[in-house]
Length: 478
Image (tube, rainbow, N blue to C red):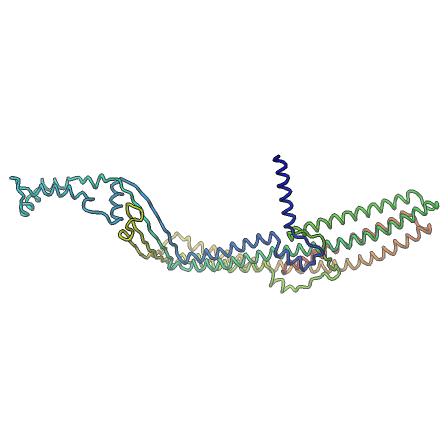
């Protein structure tokens, strides 16, 4: 029974997933680029990182507003020091708590005359000056002070601490947090550029595979025509069985290549669906002849996000130097405390309340040279980042020039291979006619057909390489 329930649960889950999955047909590249911006999961993750950076700015600003804590403490003790302290904090200490009842009894005895009558003050002063009377008073042990009853103590207080001056640490940390937001935005834009690059590349791959399938289909039809002609010639005794076998072998090879092209196209559709987080059944193919890129180097250097991140890192490092220099400046803070204590929770709160306010200043005089060493560290880090920016610009310029040179070389090869394909097609047709006339062997025709397919594969490889180079420039600039 439980297996039946599990089956229905999985079936319903898959049905819900299928119903929630968007499906696109004849999807244009422009629309796909908008969809990947909104739906791609990696871009969503990058957005989370950007939001975390934004919250980091709120954290940095929050330190300037100070900190307010509410503290509640409940205690129970018969420790003499604690109980006496509880009474003082609750404003309930009296002379009885000091054991004055016993002290007064001893004091009364010291004022008695030898005949049992209460003496006057002069007699008391005389007796009090007596060492024995003084010793008796001092040796009185106050029982209530030393052995108090168990007492509960509830203390509720509010403590507010506010930084007044930190040598610029807080303001610099706020500036750094703002720059980290920009860094998060650049990281997200870099992920977006990567995903758009992958979408464009996939569109081009699919369009190229469609064209390759079309060319292979044309070749397949030509070989099928050659096969029928070979069968007719065999029936008439002008061709051998091996001739037909060679043609059918070549036909099988073309069909295998056609199947591989279709499989690659299906994988490309699956990857595109993954990028868009939706099911893409078909696309609007892009023109393979108009796909080009003309972005000047100065635009690349201005827009490249790696360079922008490095420059932002240089600014952050400058702020870190200011943070390190704050160690040579004083720190000033204020605090205020308000609370109330009693042996019962929230009992007579205002009657037992108290407050404390104050200001504290701290200035570092000696730290073993640690602060100066930290400043030098941050300066070296800033210098390192500056050199990294310079290196990045030169590296990107070199990479840009290298890619453009490779594109020009590929353009020349593509034009040349197209001419060769047109020539091999004419040669193949000529050999096909010569075979019908008995002037060439079927092996010659198959060789020319193989050469035609080889040239077609070379064109596919060159076009794919050219497209990848162009998209690399797009990725560098956007």
